[in-house]
Structures are given as structure tokens and as C-alpha cells.
Image (tube, rainbow, N blue to C red; front, top):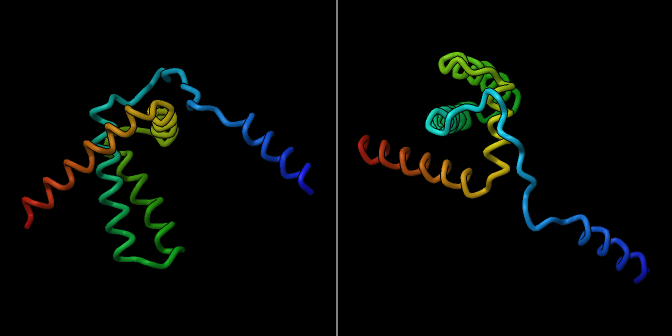
Length: 114
């Protein structure tokens, strides 16, 4: 049993990387400033739908429809958003910076409302 545990641990340890593999920049990368706006709007949309419609089925269907409408507003396909998310996600500090900017922007909007 100890050998099995040690073997599993060794495989896991060898499989871990200290860094996320960087994905090459896609041809149609969403610019950082647009990415911040899209993700900010998606965050607000998700918070609203979660609050108003707590059942999973309604939430899923409404998020799909509303998310599609939001992407149309920005003239962005889901594929392009997905590729851009993968790109920015492979750059941890950049993605953290994007989310920090989103949080700051939403906090500022909330303070104005209050």
C-alpha cells in the first residue's frame, strides 16, 4: 500500500508544473480594454440572474440567452471569447490584473449608486 501511495505521489509531482503553459496569441484576440468591459458586464449579468433565478435550469437557460445577447452587443463570438480567455488565462498576472480592474470598476459603480 505504501508503494502505491508513493508511486501515485511521484506521478502527481512529476506531472505538476510550476508555471501554466502560455498559449500563443490568437489572431482575433479581444483587446484587453474590451475584455475588461465584456467580463464586467458578464459578472453583473451573472450576479443578477443568480439573485433573481436561483433554480439551476432557469439560471442556465437565461444565462445562455443573455450571454449570447451580450456577446452580440460587443460583436464577439463565443469562440473568440473562449480563445481570448484561454490566452489571458495562460498569463496569470495579466488575468489577475483584468479581474482587479473589473472589481475596482464595479466597486466604483456601487459607491455611486449608494
